Image (tube, rainbow, N blue to C red; front, side, top):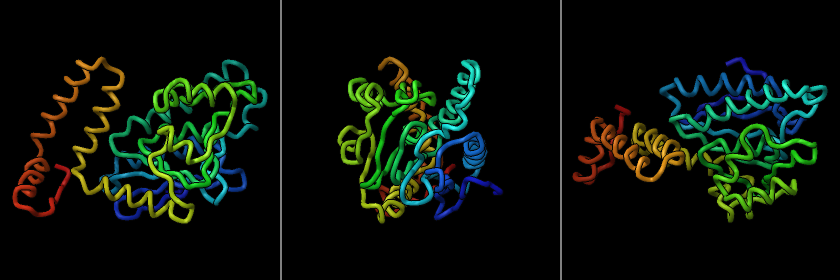
Length: 260
């Protein structure tokens, strides 16, 4: 696909996207953001890719943060535009109707933590580390960290990280609900692939509508969110996959979903 800082690989309907700047600890710069945006647009439109997994090259870092060299000389207007650009990309990841998993190897700091937060699920190696240390640079997180982190772990724990610039290990992240699973580093890729394949076993439209129901419903009052759920439940009931799934259950056989 012609990327310079991103490796793309398909394995059994799973699209692996690897940020490939190990010498810079996979730090995000303008080029990486542009390539990620292009890769996600391609993933969203590719019927042969059902789940995406994002990870980092090497053993030290998932994404250790933004490339600080790009901050030098920024005006307030430049910095706001810089923030909005990253937010647009991470919003697109979070809004994707196909699941996105972060396979977090090593450091996920600053923009790297925000990238993991934008994914729907997170699998972490036991050596993973998470933090939002932007305050040490006189900044705040700009790619959604002040918003997604408290929504995921609660405001108290989020503020502990945001206000101290501290870093937590994978076990703590798991206990906080920041990550779904923790495995040994050598097992990270197989574990993320297995999780992706567990998702792929379900009906694709049902998976997409679960993502939509949760994403939309979290921003609605409960009653309105349940109206959203009911409408999406109705749309699922009209699919061929629903008829296949119920028939397979009654006939005690594996379902063969087609995404229709």
